Amino acid sequence: MRPYDFAAEDFDVTSARHVADPFDFYRRLRTQEPVFRSEELESHVLSRYSDVRSVFLSHDKFSSIGSLTAATHIDPDVAQFLVDNNATLATFLANVDQPLHKRLRRSVSRSFSPRSMSRIGPQIRALAIELIGELKPAGRADLVADFAAVLPARVTSRFLGIPMEDTAQVQQWVDDWFALFFSPMPVEQQHLRAAGYVKYSHYMHGLLAARRAEPREDFMSETIAAVADGGAELSDQEIVDIMTAISLGGNDTTGNQIAGLMYRLLAVPGAWKRVVADPSLHANAVEESIRLDSAGLGGFRVANEDIEVAGRTIPAGSRVFLSQDSANHDETVFEDPDVYVVDRPNAGDNIGFGVGIHHCLGAPLARLELRIVLEALASNLPSMRLIDDSQRAYRSSVVQRAMESLPVEWS
Image (cartoon, helix red, strand yellow):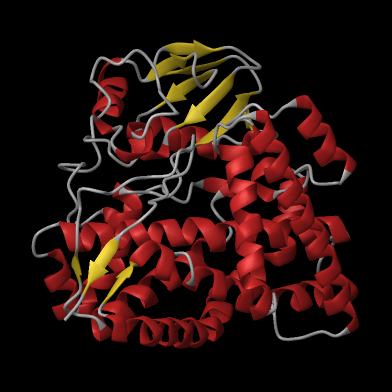
């Protein structure tokens, strides 16, 4: 696969190389044009670690409103259809500013505390072992379709309170959401994907009513109870939007990160043997995967005022793209940044989950799941190996890295 040329004029979001191998192009931006005006993204692109991190932390100067709808051009009729069905992302955590953001996040943050994670950990481990047991007799699998796309959906369903029998349908609706907002597509496809997202929204409202009538031990029931006793201030739509955001990250993003992690461990000579032999490397191996192959390529912001970055003025009202992918490959922070190093000392300095108030709410759950997955696969399938690396391909997306297939086998 041909990577971006070092001297490429702009991003090419419809090409496979945009997701698979953009790192040569990023290097040029960091070294020559750290504030790059992209006509393709209609944004000023920031590529250096220090600049990207600084803007993440400057939430008063850069607005997040509309950040989730900036990746693609939604047809006006499709946009109106979403408005008519109350599926607008208006109260998504990643899509709002203060003070709304603070109220929404504070209302649910306790569900992602270390105590809460310690409760869900054994359930994740049991689900992982169960799925590995289903796959093991065959001696081979597509690690994306058969594992990375399946386990996170089951984990997320268990955490949120989605019935397991609905998991596959919810996964399809999640795919519709990601495709609609993050992947370029014809208007006809936008209509189809939008219809799927609206069905998902209606489903979640129905589930909210069911959990209000019959609470269980899950995130939705906990949130409903917190609202009832005054511990949280959320409308029904806000609860559904928070549930949706967690479902999106848990179903799609975490699965993509699992695939990226396992690809590097199996493709880099000696890496898989090292983590199989030494479980103490697992946490760092996960962080290095998030750094090198982050499932999220970056995010959009809008400048609230004229702001100088790296000697360039970004005018008020301008859209800015924060390239986390490039920042995590910044050679001034990470030595040999395009190389996967299992025991890289500062792998944890990656900003794959963002920084500041918009740091990914579900990051603790995602990291826990990644570590447990690595432990379970290393323990139960130590002889795993790639079947064919030449067919590796990624889903077309402006801001997401999603491997389409990863064939593996074991003795």
